[in-house]
Length: 365
Image: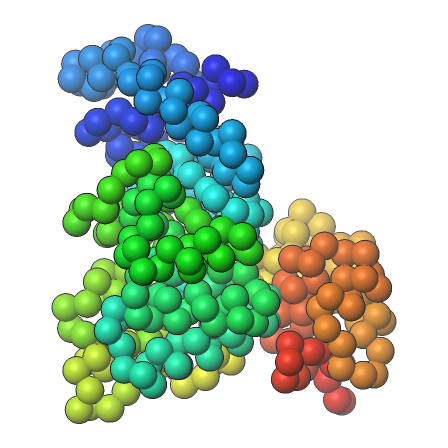
C-alpha cells in the first residue's frame, strides 16, 4: 500500500500531465504502478518519457506530509472518491485533504461571489450559509476574501460543515489573511486541493479550483458578482456539469448585482431565501440521501419504509419539544451526518420544522 501511495504521489507531480491525459488511462484499468513502470504505447513519447522519470524525492516529501494527523490523499480510483466528482471527464486525478474525509461525499451547496462585496452582500452570504449548514448541507467555497469568507464563517457559526477548495497546496493559504479561517475549517470541516503540498497560487489554478467547487456540489449559489467576476466562471462550469445555478438579485444601481442579473437572464434560478434553494434541490437530495439499492426501480419509499426504519426512529425520538441535532444523535445512536441529512429531507417534506438556535420540532399537522 505504501508503494502504491508513493506511486500516486509521484504521478501527481508529473509536469504538464493532468487529468485529460491520465484519467482515460486509469479508467481503462491501468494501475498507477503500470503507468510508471511500463508507460502505454497509446500516449505520446513526451508523456511516456515523463512517466518513466517521476520525481521520487518530492513524492517522499509528500508522503511525509500525509503522515500528519487528518491529512489524506484520495486517488480517482478510490471507492471513497466523491461520486458526484468522479463522473466529470476532467475530474481531479487525485485530491489532497486536510480535515474530515467523509465530508467530500456529503450533500453540498457551493457559494461564490465577489471578493469585495457590499456589507449587505456579505451578511446575506453568511445568513444563507448558516441556514444551509443548520439544515444539514455542507457549504463549499473557495476560501477567497469576500463572499467565500462570509460563507465559510456562516457555516462554522451554525456548527455545521464547510469545505474550502484551494488553488494552492494545502500547506499554503491564499490569501494569507485567511490563515486562521483555514485552520478552523481544517479542524471542523475540510480543506481540499488537487495541487500537491508546496504549490503556490497561479492564475491558471483558480479556474481549475472552480470546477471542483461546482463539481462537488448539487448546486451553485452566486450572491454578488460583477459582470467580469470569476464567480460567473464557476456558474458556467456548474451549468456544463448539469448542476443547479442560483443567483440572488440586487439593486439595478449596484455593479455587483449585474453578474447575478446576467445569470438570471440566462436561466439561473432567482432566489430570495435559503428555503428557495432547498426546495429546488429537494429532488436531487432525495436521490442523494436515499440508498437506491433498498428499493425496487421506479419506487420511492416513504420515510417509514426507509432503510432500517431510521426515519421513523428519528421522528419518534423528537418528541413534542424543540430538540437539537446533538440530542437526536444521543437518543438514536445514529451518526451526526446521517441525522443532519435525514432532518434536511424531512424538513423539505414538511414533516419537521427548524427553529431558532438550530433546533427542530415535529411539524404541526
